[in-house]
Amino acid sequence: MSEMKKYKMYINGEWIESTDGEYFPSYNPATGEPWCYVAKGTAEDVDRAVQAAHHAFLHSSWANMTFTERGRLVRRLGELISARVDELANFETLDNGKLIREMRGQLSYLPEFFYYYAGLADKIHGKTLPIDKMDMFVFTSREPLGVVAAITPWNSPLYLTTLKLAPALVAGNTIVIKPSEVTSASLLELMKLVDEAGFPPGVINVVTGFGMPVGDSLTKHPLVRRIAFTGGPDSARHVVRNSGENFAQVSLELGGKSPNIVFEDANPDNAAMGIIAGIFGASGQSCVAGSRAFLHVDIYDKVMQKLVDRVSQIKIGDPLKNDTEMGPLATQAQLERVKQYVALGHEEGGKAVFGGKVPEHLEKGWYFEPTIFEHTDHSARITKEEIFGPVLSVIPFKDEKEVIQLANSTNYGLAAGIWVSDVAKAHRVAKAVNAGIVWVNTYRSISPIAPIGGSGLSGYGREGGYEAIHEYTQSKVVWVNT
Ligand code: NAD
Figure 1 (cartoon, protein in one colour):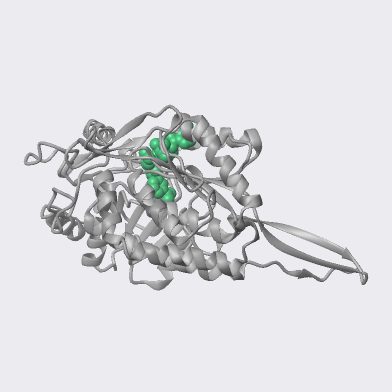
Figure 2 (cartoon, helix red, strand yellow):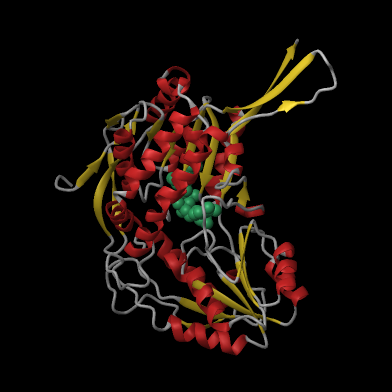
């Protein structure tokens, strides 16, 4: 342990150990071995961070900073990230096992989110209200909320942090971030850039550690006014219960069981490639993973053949190598979960047409083959529950009405893909499908301008786009008797 890197937390502009001085290991999923140690935060550390953020919100130079200046700082942070993409990507790959080229791609686009929100900083305004009383002048303004808590999972650490951090800052809030215990390094590296950019102490704080006690005490802290949570449903229920103590606002970005619907007039090559990128990108560990493919019976064989042909060529292995196409799962627990779901798929009568096991040539690390299950109907649990791994369920359908009913037959509502040529049908199905994000003849496209979010078990609230500014501000109305 002595030779391995040890990360401290970042609170009030300082690097500090946890109050009890403990550290925990962070593992490299490609080897299953620890590669660094991270400070194990406590409830006292959370209180320290929230107090610092509260003080910064009310009393630091941040409190009186103009919106333009705040925007400039946020833009500066984006510029510093853009100069450090390779390094940050390397830390993310070491922590979560995602492909280095995927992380580089994601992180080189990340500054755009900072620039987008920086550009909105001086466009957050209220309106005058034409009240029907001559002697009254009435106007609204958008005010920051105060201290925001951001809780993130391990699959896209900096991207999912940015969706919270950038709008929260330009709106004038301060923030305490709790990264996943699986992936703390890249966020702590980012804090060096926060320092360099010149944010006043306390505006951005990071407390590392586990859901219990760090996430728990953060979400019950009376000074936290908003909780932006991305993760799984069990933790989300806990967060919502805690938020009730002090009526903090909450947004939940949870999982999904997203459908990719392929109609008979779709381009089969594009559809097959879209399905593969949708489910096997990030080894299936994406909230918007297109884990169900509904193929029209008239195009079924053709698309299925293309899926199997391409998937059988996917090169699995070391995520740090540029030519690797699929890396390991992020944790051993995740690997066990995938194995259990695959066993269940077999028990339920699904037919694995490809994959279904740990690759023979990879003895170390948490790898699993890209797996395709064929089902005759939509009754199996693996077609309804989020696996968060490289497992695709393929289901045939005969007509539009049937496939909409099937696509909407889970309790999730995050994303959907539609592969079709008929434009009218594309619009009808996009409207009918229960999803917060719909992609037509594309999948997993993102932009700072486009909001993200779902309904049902996928959570509520929106991240990204202008919507996020509303999520991080509240309206104030002022009546002036003239
Ligand atoms: P998780 O719920 O286990 O952990 C997420 C975060 O919550 C971590 O930081 C964790 O420490 C924290 N946490 C755990 N228990 C807590 C508690 N009691 N109180 C407060 N915080 C607590 O999820 P995970 O395994 O890290 O991530 C996988 C899940 O995240 C999947 O379900 C996936 O679909 C979802 N996800 C959603 C999106 C989206 O944008 N919709 C994006 C990525 C991942």
